[in-house]
Image (cartoon, rainbow, N blue to C red; front, side):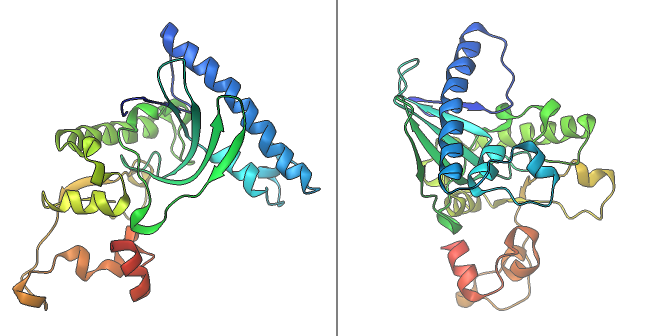
Length: 253
């Protein structure tokens, strides 16, 4: 959490009085956003189909999909004098300690709502210290049971601690996907999803922080040793988008 920014998870549990006040305040703003999104859909002559739509073959609108998917809100400004609220959909929440912001809606203190553009590729924004936003009783990833969700949360907490020891949450250059990758490379580290064959372990799989493996073969310019991530970019799950040179450039640069 940065100075002047208070982040609250959609399913984060709160028991303290001050935190409960924050929950109450954000819930009111959430209602304003919901009404705005419903108005956009109905203004196009479409129907806001509600939860039943996700159980049918009918595809929900983009606005409704966002309403079901957003996972956290950033409250900007001094406590209880917030100037606005950023609702964010976080891709990878529950899988990694640095999920990517893929869609965001800004709601002013007066309740006006605006959709903001999200950078993509290596410039995509990431959020740090997200383990506290998670609740194993209401896991954001479908599939794991509660015991598996608790195990996954423990792993994310561990990686959160490792990233904090490296001060990644305090480095301005580590708040983008590409910047975090480069910052971790300075320590010869990377975030990677373990390769699993399935079974119960797959339900608790989360990204781990590990040393970048080195290989002693292959061609590298100016005698620089290639690492496994570079040589197998198209075969690593998190680099699945690298099916073209253009895709690799957009991801890395």
